[in-house]
Length: 98
Image (tube, rainbow, N blue to C red):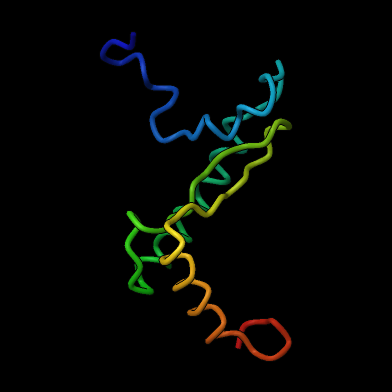
């Protein structure tokens, strides 16, 4: 049971990404998560600017078992397909940005 103010650790922190192992003492998971959060926020702003709804596709910050930040893309298949089409439209023949 979680009372008021007791869920501060999971507020915005995707702890589901950390279920692959135990937390290791001395590993700074928060710093890695903050780095991932900054990158995820930037990507989410870009997704919004491209006309995508964050309820359909979004970047999610997490960490791996070593505490390194990880950004995962989560979304409905049709929204992810639309994002892929947008990226393909803006990619050149070598796979880089136009």
